[in-house]
Image (cartoon, rainbow, N blue to C red; front, side):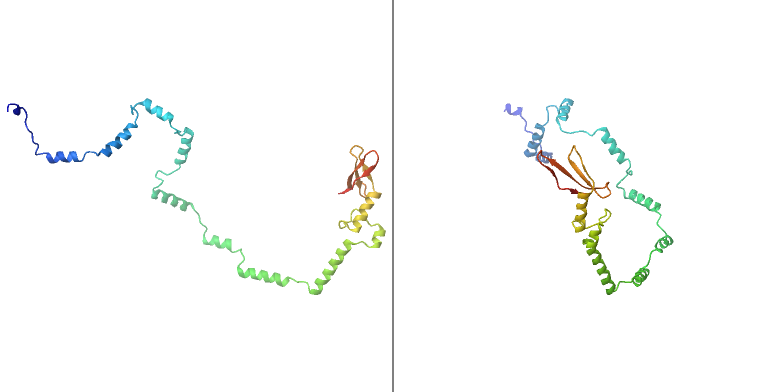
Length: 233
């Protein structure tokens, strides 16, 4: 029994409930595992400047330069002290409205009065229609016959005109009409022609001897000399 006196049994009765509460609210094993997983990824000395500098240097982060920061500041300096403050927005709107000078009714009426009203437009249209004198059917047919006759005269030459030799350079003939072909023939056969000895190019002139009518090339193979087809200008 002597050994039994060496041990005393201590029973905690007043604070059993508090102890149970502390033990029952401790972290779960899952929470402890999650904390350990994150702490395992920390460097050996998280507060070391060397560790921080090494990780920053290895990252892809690029800090903005001073010019970029200055550009941002220049824009934000133009913002009001509290951009999202409804009162500040209302103040700016009120200033803009106060500076706006809308036209008065008298100014509007003075600007609109010169414009023609609908009744005035109708009057102008009626006046123009009343003044218009459309041609009668007989007048229109007469004009048509005169136009057709003029067109026919452009396409054909009378025998008298052809024999009279009225092929002046100033006259205008339809392309490839009889008059046009006869005048071109006259230019080539009767008018001045210049041949360039260096290039073998030739130039045919109109009746005035100055204005070019056509150009072309002359070839000589040692046996025969040939003139190419003229290009009419």
